[in-house]
Amino acid sequence: MTVLNIEKYGSKVLRQKSQNVNEISKDIKLLANDMLETMYFAKGVGLAAPQVGKLLRLCVIDVDEKQKSPIVMVNPEVVFGEDKKYLEEGCLSIPSFYEKVKRFDKVTAKYTGLDGNKKEVCAQGFFAVAIQHEIDHLDAKLFIDYLPGFKRKIIEKEIKRKRKRKMGDW
Image 1 (spheres, rainbow, N blue to C red):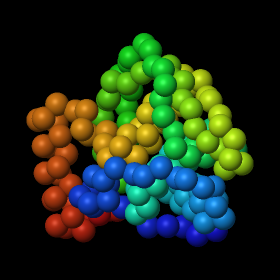
Image 2: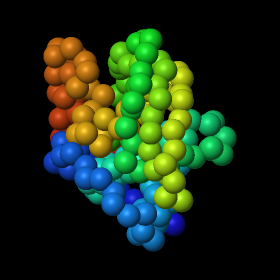
Image 3: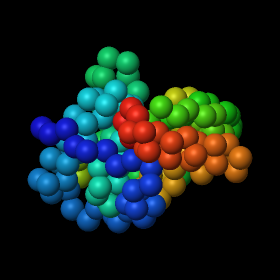
């Protein structure tokens, strides 16, 4: 397995919609495994294919603190959501920034597993937020898109400052 490069805020690929995966090929399975390796290496809980430069509807999630319950979702979609709440979010593509975002606290999502079978998952709390966050990446949305304009502008200015000084992950 390989640790892949994670695209950062400003990369054009993060603002392009992903295409459906038509076949669970060897390459898709390898990409999913590399994405899991990358997510664990970066100490994240989710990673979408656009974050590693691939415009495919594929994401990986593991909200288990012991990193023992990975879920790989091919062509995922939220089919039901209820009880919106604010929870703090961060993103591997926008490192070191965290803000509260209002999302569904409970969701039902459908997806295809790496075995090719259709699946459904009901999630609540942090797991539900992670699913919505990763599916947003597939739809070219970032968590900061949900923030009020002034907060987003502050983050964008700070990112530019960090890039200019080559600070941290920038």
